[in-house]
Length: 294
Image (cartoon, rainbow, N blue to C red; front, side, top):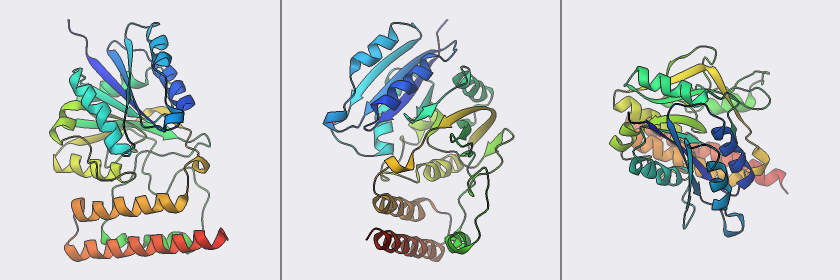
C-alpha cells in the first residue's frame, strides 16, 4: 500500500531557534502518513541554518524526513513558501502544511485532524484550526474582506472606544467548526492539486494580504476553506521583533492596493475609494509614528 506523503513547509528568516523548536513539534506528531519537512531559509548569511540540525532529528523517526533549501535572496512570504510548495509537488505530497517558525503544535494529532478534514471532502482545499496568542487572543477564522462601503472603518477604530476582547475585530466564530471565508497564513493546510491549479501563491505581495488573495482564489474556483475548532496552535508572534512599523505598513499598503486592483469584487469606483482610503490611512499612520519618534 502506498503511504500518503504530507509536506510541512517552514519559511525561516533569521529565526533559527524558533524553526528548530517548530521542527520538534512536528517530530512529535502522530501520523499514519509520511511527513516531509521542508525548511526554506531566507535568512541573512550570519543567521543561516545548518543542515545537521535536521539530519539529527530525522534519525529518530523513519516517518519524518527533513530538507533544507537555502535561497539566494529574500523575496517574501509567498515566493519563499512557493519554493517549498514546488518541492512538495516534486516529492508527490498530497497535502502541505504551511507553518510559521513561531508556531507551537501542542496537540500531537494536529496534522492528523487536518488531514481527516481534507480527506472527508475533496472540495475543501484549505483547512486551518483555532490559533491563539500566548495571551489567549484568537486569530482564526478570519472574516471575509468587505467591499468599499467599509473602506473608512479604520476611522472608527482610531477614535472609537476600545473594548477588552479575546479576539481581534476581524475574527469570526472560533468556537465551532465550519466552512469559513478566510484563515490566517501563519498555519494552514493546502490541497496540493489546488495549489498547482492556481499556479502556487501569487508572488506580487512581499508581505501581507496573502490570506485575502488565497481566499478569493478559493472562492473563484468554487472550493471551500474549513475551520477546525477542536484543536489549537499557539502563535508566539512578537511584534517588537518585526522591525520598523512604518516599513511594514508600506508593505501592507502595496499588497492591499494590489488586492483591490487584482482581486476585489468592487466596481472601478469602489476600488478607487478603497485605494484612496488605504493611502490616507498609511499616510496618517506614518506621520504619527514619525512625530512620536522625535
